[in-house]
Structure formats: C-alpha cells, structure tokens
Image 1 (cartoon, rainbow, N blue to C red):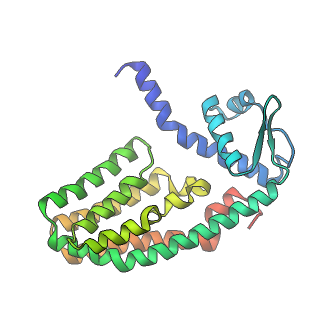
Image 2 (image 1 turned 90 degrees about the vertical axis):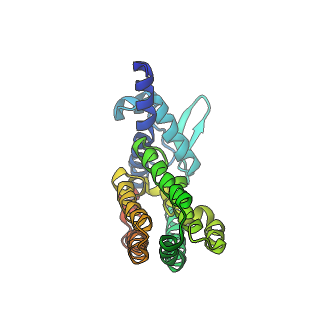
Image 3 (image 1 turned 45 degrees about the horizontal axis):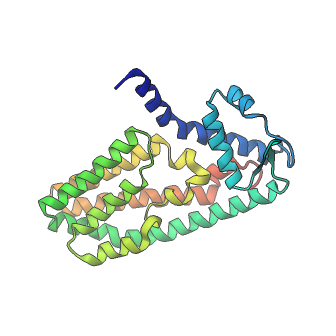
Length: 256
C-alpha cells in the first residue's frame, strides 16, 4: 500500500471517533446554554481549528446534529442552534430512555432463547456450522481492528450459533428480532462513547470467544454458562445506563 493510501486509510479509521467526540461536545454546549437557542455556530474553519479535526469531520458532526433537530443550516448564512433546541434535547433523552427499555425487553427474550441454543449448538454443530461461527467471530475481529461498525457481524455470530442447533425455530426467532438483537445499534446515536468504544467492543469479543470455544469443544454446560454471562453482562450494562443516567447525564448535563 502506498503512503498516501495508508494516510487515507488511517483518516477513515479515525473519523467516526473524532466525529462522535465533536457531536458530544457540541451537544453539551447546547444543553448547558453555552450555545444558546438561535445563536450561530462557529464557522467550519473555526470548529476545525478549535477541535483539531478536519472539515470533513466537522461536516459529519453538523449533519448529525441537524438530524437530531439541534441545529439548522441556513444556506449562505451558516449553522444556527435550533430555537427549539431545549425541546429537541428533551425529546432525545426521552427517546433514548425508551430505546434502552426496549433493549432490556429484547435481552430478556434473548436470555430465554440463546442460553439453551448455545448448549444445543455445542451438542449438535457440524464442522461446517462451526466454521460459520468462527467466520462470524473473525469478521467481528477484523471490523473492530479497522474501527468499523460491528453490529452486523455481531448478529451473524449469534445467528450462526442458532443455526448450529439444527432447530430452525431458533433462527426464526432471531430473524424476527432482526436489528433489535444487537442493542447498541438502537442507541448509539446518543451514547456512542460508551457503546461503540473499543474497550466495550473488545469486552464483547472476549465474551464471544468464550462462547465459541465452548461450542468448539462440544461442551454444552460451558457454552450455556458463557452465553448466560455474555447476555447477563449486557443486561447489567443497560440497566446501569437506564437507572443512573450514565452517558445521558454526560451528554445532557442538568437535563435528567
């Protein structure tokens, strides 16, 4: 790979995290009143210099804030804080609380289904089905290394385990849940710093490895326990987010 291609690849890898941080910072400034309703945001050039990010990152952050209803771009005039930003913030907080409640409901169903599916997979999986589980695990690993979204690979991992039960109804249930199966895909618009962090996802992958190893070793008891620990840990994390405010309070100080 040429040096300029390496530089471009590095920028693509770093951009989502930089944009996340800028979005969170600007949200805090809007929530605290530092950027008051109707006020004009600093120019793209000023934000780029102040936060040490590229203009591409600034544009991405502004686009996301506009999608949340917090800012309004006006052609030829600049970007302004929405006059109704306080109401938009309240709506975002309520929306996230509702989504976390939904996640907990989904996790409750998954615990009832996937703990036993892991044990059955350990008993029944074929070599080709084990290869599919390994492949999904590897895809997650590669995406994590490249700092790209891992939700699809995460779902593929759990679905491959369901397929390895050789009971089609386990797969059907996951397919019905669809994207709701992976909690962070529902809430990362507001809590990306917590749910998309490398540390968080590395922990998920460590939990996945324990499940995969138990299935590979045809140990249903260990597979059942590993899946229970994995889903229970997720349940605990989201209970904490819902009950304590967690990332919400950091993003919306004084609003909870």
